[in-house]
Length: 456
Image (cartoon, rainbow, N blue to C red; front, top):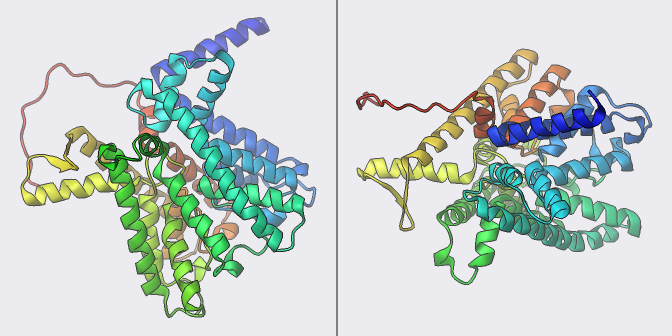
């Protein structure tokens, strides 16, 4: 077969996959980007020492970047060269925007329009219900990302200059941290990490604000931007996402402050103002940013357990955050409340939530719990580490959060591969994984008689 014929056959195959199973193509594209990133990070030019990075570390870092997680086996600021950091940052941006969204942007730039295939792919990535909304959503993605990232960079570049850096390094580090914050990536290029700046409001507030905006999701940003003067007209999804995220943030900040207030290794040694800022940052980082200004490894086990729960929930749907998503939690809570009250329908803000949405929420929560449970068992078999440390690391990987108790670098290669697969599954989404693996959709003409088994 000639080269043009092979190219045409490949294009037809991709188009067939896109139309028959967009979710499966999304997984393939994400995997292809990770493979490319791994190859680039395996080059000698990618490391500061000029030596090839071990394959396990290159794969882990590439997966963490594309899946906007932030877990690392080597120090980003010192181990990787400028070229390696550029590769990581490109992976962060691609993963934050979403590979399918980026594909539609490129298609729009080339053909001046978005075809059906691109719309289907973007609808999968961004959870858009109507294909007609995809074009507007893409514009919202590009504008929101550019505006927020540029704003964060404008704030952070002077901060790096204030640290004594030259203009060139300050510009690079400011842009890198701006993209890392908004995309909830968790990568840090500050020598020594962020803990020395725990009381620096110039750094802490951009982390809190940028993480929140990135974690609410692009559909929410689009809806609020259109109806910002009339909150009553916001969609149910936007209201549930914003309200649930705000409640989780406030509750987490207060709880972490109470748990760690007297811990000399974290908040106990700080002044009142520094404790407040550190609590705000730590209350927001489990949304998925993973940018901690205190030593997570020195936190109390009660704080670890709370953070586990917060990371598992994650941020908003079609956002840069991971987890089962805040709307999943909101729907499950509303279903429990409706059942406790004896209500026939599940309602919120004058809208009724259908049973199919509840089934989807249960499926997402169950599949996420299953992935976390299996991965925890595998890591317990591979290491001698305690359960609390392993569980924290596993949930952080699944929720693409990036917080760590400090055990990642010392894990065996097998455990790194498990966490890499978990980050991939967590970023692509449990339902996307399930849909991609399904061979066909079952359509049944005959429905069985209804009967209720005893529950509880």
